[in-house]
Length: 445
Image (cartoon, rainbow, N blue to C red; front, side, top):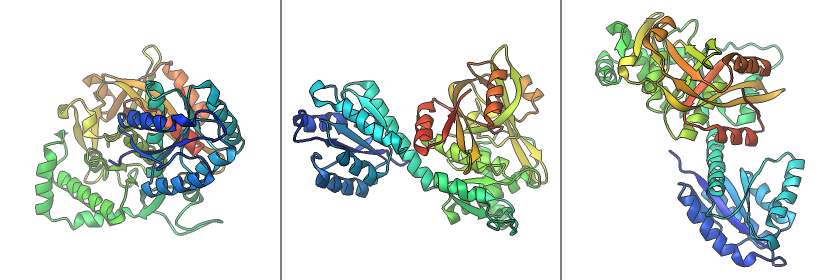
């Protein structure tokens, strides 16, 4: 996992009070952030003028920092802060210090007004490095910067058929793909399902048998026959080859209706190896899964959709024809591999109880804008009979604060997509920051 790096600079004016604290502020901030596992790259000097700012920006660019943390030891001019923001083009947090004579917080408010006028997002904190909330927020912004950089460099494969025809636009790409790439920076790679299946067909039976012996140890109850499972193993190996060949970060693969079950079990196996394979060609949610996995620094994310609502207990029952990671079940005994389509499978499991989860979704386009759901909840234990009654597929009993029907009303009112992502842990603050810096509307229940 890539480390998180922030560029830490201290600005000061020769004509204002407070510059004498610059080195002390730098050292204390660096020490506090490093305790949060943030790698801190400090400028080689305090920034007193534009020449200093340009020099320090060169240093920080060479280090490829994820965010910029600017400590204002005094009031400084707009033009000085402008250089830093314009040169770095990164999520920026202004750190105001609690010394009245410095007008530090006033400087943040003043320059922040200019940034707001020009639609440039920013954050600020107020206090010293011994205040937990201050340091935690700076660290979170650095984490958001790391995720943004990764997403902008993301290579996401769209696996499935595209015909070369047009109305008044591109041929085998769509305007929607162009819009999505321009907004988020993701590079979309077109790959045909036939390429994966042809690769799978070239896997020797001996290699498939040996690999399945390894995979079987981390696979649940199998209802499919041996031939099907060996085919699934060959597809799994083929996807790994494709990931390497195209340097992919994730895949959104065609499944329903013509390739039902071809990618589900490989998706589950690969998810527990850190490789995202969405099985419905859902590019947007694949990207958000990538964001959530980066925020958590590992682990898998579940994708489902509302199957039923329980207002009394405030539970949304999410279901999906399964491709969910085995690790999200309570144990292997709760996972079932069922046959699906021609030589395909789906993975059935009830998601294990989780005290805190992040719930997300994405919808929109380049014309009207994009929006991301940022919510939290918990996963309640699903009993075996509930899972059986739900079709022995994925079942997530998602507990939320509002009545279930009120939450669905809100999602429908906002026009959110039916897919919901569930990630163990609370990453709502990080997602909120990502919405802010991506200039994407944040939606809640």
